[in-house]
Each structure stands twice: as structure tokens, then as C-alpha cells.
Length: 473
Ligand SMILES: Nc1ncnc2c1ncn2[C@@H]1O[C@H](COP(=O)(O)OP(=O)(O)O)[C@@H](O)[C@H]1O
Ligand SMILES: [Mg+2]
Image (tube, rainbow, N blue to C red; front, side, top):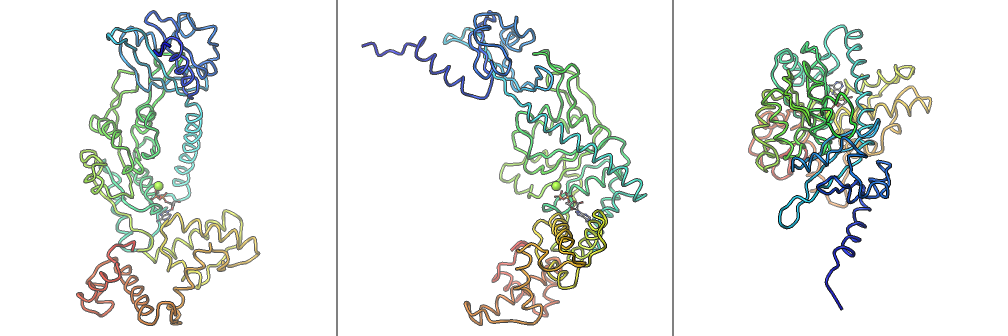
């Protein structure tokens, strides 16, 4: 029996089966543009049947197709953004095909349908633009002055940070905002933009969320490619939209390393070229970036480019976590309370002292955002229960529980934990007291030792013993 593969028959069937069952449209033509293969996805997407097109010149069906260009120029194209018909978007890659003697025999195109993604991102953009306009108006009319007055604090160090940012807002320097999630990085970025007096837009990009394939067209835009009936005017990218304004690069520390050179080049040249275009456009953009990652460490680990870091980090701002500015917890809780009561037409509800104690003693990993959500939820629950003050039951259970432990020693109602015995119970309490003293002094060891009235060496020993070296321990 002949065990040799019959390429024509067997292999072709296997390949066709595989190609028919992937979500990308696949087209193969020979070097005379004759269509050799057209998979099931392509049939559905372009509404042309295989019977119609196989053996025919592809250009008769798709006059602007990319594949003939690939054959003529013997150049591969990767991730070309395209809109074959209204309200339909694809990303196309097309490559020349060679036989084993390296002679050109045809070309293969792979089109990926990204319509859903594009529609979604248009929707988000529209919503963002509306919000932006509202915010601009609001800050002008209601506040009469600076957008910075949206940022509340009664913590000395934090107020210093606010004033510093206000001062540098009017300069063209790039700013890098460091801070945990919910500490107000985006709020600061916007305040810096509106205070700068720059006439252009505030445009935000979440650097961790852009699909690799769309990165360039999203940031730099694309030109009306001479490919299948694309949108006539092409489309601007985020950089162009931010021209004359501010580009906010959020979560910059999470940007994939392979995309960083493209961003760096645009920043260095101060200009962009749309995908599929050849005209460089000079831009005037202020960059504000933000991250909760330790960029210096990322650089050491090879996950972030040093040169990009130096571009972005002309001026660095550290936003303190909420747990290290306890006075702001009360200030913000009351402000959010007032806001939600007004928005919902509710008579002002109170926050009694025992609830304020709970709020003050919690660690707020989600910072101001988490506090705002907790207050919003509590206001709604208080109203539903016809209460004119927030009660413990209106807080999420993790907050209700936290106090039970803390309250014991806050109220001097210290109890033996029978499971661990006297010594360990005392140690637990000691750890708690030292931790709070450290937070109070913003982790300044000399001040903490003074506050506790113990020698510094003893403090160091105890910090080591209880593992309190890092803020988050
Ligand atoms: N100091 C502050 N004063 C008033 N609102 C604040 C303050 N800090 C943060 N917020 C609010 O908290 C929420 C989260 O802030 P955001 O800027 O999105 O944080 P981040 O970008 O750091 O995650 C937003 O609703 C913001 O308006
Ligand atoms: Mg944010």
C-alpha cells in the first residue's frame, strides 16, 4: 500500500478543516490574483460564497483588497486597520507565500472582525466626551475657580502636594503620579489639565487595557487605507485628540514592554504618523502619567524601559494612601454623605461617632474610591430603612466585623484571647499600638519612638519582630 501522503487530497482537507473553524476570515490567492481559498468565516463576513469566488480574480470582488498589493510589492502587511463597509471593522494581516525554491506563488490574508470592540470603544468615547464637557462647565460655573477645589484634604502633607501640583500645572513639564488605586490620580491629572489653561482636550488612555493589535491605530490613528472600501477620511488617534491639551497615560507601569518603544518614539519626536499614512503631524502635548507600580523595580526586572521612564518622570508626585491621612477619612466621608443626600433629595443623614470610629480604623485598601462607595451604599440603605443616621447595619459586613476587634481595645475592654494565651494577646495589642503610632507619624521612626516613649533601638527591634517594616504589613 502506498503510505505516502497525498498532499492534494488529504493535507488539503485537513488544512481546510482547520482554516474553516477559526474566527478569522482567510483568503488565499495565487500570484495572478486568482482566488484559491476562501474560508467559511470569510464567506459569512463578506457575504460572498466560495462557489462564486474560487478560481476568479479577487479584484473583481474586492477592488481595493490588500492581497494584490502584497503580491505586487512582495511585502507583508501586519495589523492594518480597515472598515470594509459601514459599521464594520477589521484588522488585516497579509503575507506573500513562497514555494520551497523561494519563488513567489501567491498570498494569504487574515482579517479579524473587531466591530464589537470598535463600537464599544466609540460608545465609551462618546460618554467620556459628554462627561468631560459637563465637568468643564461644572468646574467653571459651580466652583467659579480652580478644578483643584474638587480635591479635598485636611492633611498637611497632602495639602502641600495639592499646592505643588497647582503650581506646576501652568508649566509644560510632564508629571508622573504615584499612588495606590483610588488615591485620586485621575482627579489630579484632570486638575492639572484644567489649571494649565491649555485649550486642547484632556484625553485619557488606560495603558494596560489596549489590545496589542490596536495599539498603534488607537494612539496614532489611521489613514484611509487604499484597501477594501474603508472610511474615507481615516481616523485620528488619542495623540491627535490631545493636541494642544493633555494626554493622561493611566496605569503606565502595566504597559507591555514591546509597545513601549512606539510610545517613546512619539514622545521623543513630538509628532505622530497615522497608520497607513506618510505625513508626520507635529503635536503639542502635555503628558501626565499615573501608576501604582514601583517603576524603578520594573526597570530592574526588565519590564519597563529606562528611557521611557525618564521621558515621563520629569516631575514626580506621590499621593498618600487614605489610611495615612486619617483626618481625611472624616472630611471625605462627610462630603460624600452631603453629596449623595443632595443628589437623591434626602434630608441630611448623620454619621454618628461610633461609625466614624469604624471608618477611621479601617485600612481602606481601595482608598477614596472605596470610601465613596461605602458612604453611597450606606445612604441608600439608611433611606430605605427610614433612618436619619447611618447605622452599623448599613456598612458592609467586613467593616462591621473590623470594629469588633478594634473596639475591644479602643474602649479599654481588653479581653484575653483564650486560644493564644496571655503573652500572645499582649503582643497582638502591642503590635496594633505600634502600627498605629507608625501610621500617625507617617512611618518616621524617630517621631514614633518619641510618641511611644521608648528608645529607637527598641522600636527597631519591635518593628522587626512584628513585621511592620512596610506600610501594608
Ligand atoms: N482628595 C479627594 N477629594 C475628593 N474626591 C476624591 C479625592 N481623591 C479621590 N477622590 C474621588 O475618588 C474617586 C477615585 O479617584 P481617582 O482619581 O479615580 O483615583 P485613581 O485614579 O488614583 O484610582 C473619584 O471619584 C475621585 O473624584
Ligand atoms: Mg484611576
